[in-house]
Length: 193
Image (cartoon, rainbow, N blue to C red; front, side, top):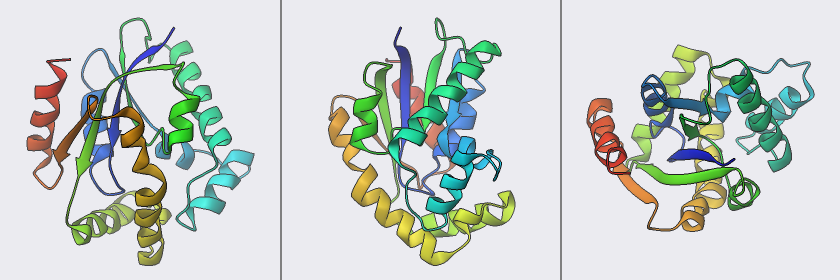
């Protein structure tokens, strides 16, 4: 069975997490943020150590541990009754992070839409990330050099996922607007899918 899925896409600081949490609170939607799953791992967990090693340098965690962590969390959420694959739409944030991961998940995900949250003002994204670092104690968002490295990594490795899914599924949304305006744009598209 393939999971009915929408992807929240965009560079770090574009607002994926905010919109994912909102959508995940709507009945029949289940939000999964890959970054949150990594940050919730303990340091004595082998994948947790891998996450710290890569994220502290602004790099992406390798594909296999990422996909394994995702699958393990989705299975646990299904068994716990949080995610109902037969009726829920899966809202993914932070996965797939490159075309290879998209290819690895193609037999598992039935992607209905990709919401590409765009922000042309890099200084605004950096400001959001630094605010979030303080508010949520996220070390990967605190250092300016790490942030710049993450933004470069996104452009080089993650942005090509948009080409993988193609213009028919990708919807560009200006994330510089207020969260409620961004949500309105998302919902306008979702009701038509």
